[in-house]
Length: 182
Image (cartoon, rainbow, N blue to C red):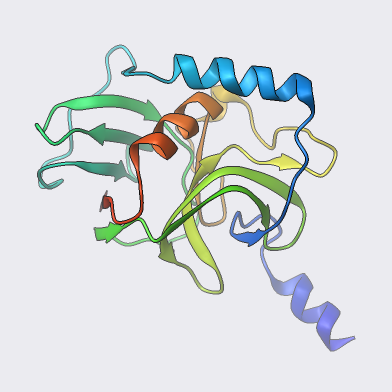
């Protein structure tokens, strides 16, 4: 059918969200609480400095060529820096954005998986783009490994390891500045 053909033409793994209620098992709640307590200020050893021209003040910086995020405090000091997996497509362009909304739980636009700690900052071709934890498919399996961070693997959003996603979530209320560099 035409609807099926249209759906098939869409990328299979865009991590844009449709709000959904996801039940979290009790065993997972304890894991998330532990990850949150570990999500204090952390910077990867040997992390590069902020990209030139990445703004001033309190902000999130995402460098697409480095596949790295920096959380920068009001004093201009880096609170946390880590590798991410951004889009493998040319759907984000350098510039300054701001956090539009956040969802603790969301579902990918094609209903193929679940997203946690979704922080939206832009609108893509057909849905929002944001930062979130590495997605889980509907069977609960991660869609990529931690070792694959630093490689563009998503179809739109910026994937983070869960403790980093929690740290960004806690760092970025609505309106927080987001700076994208090439």
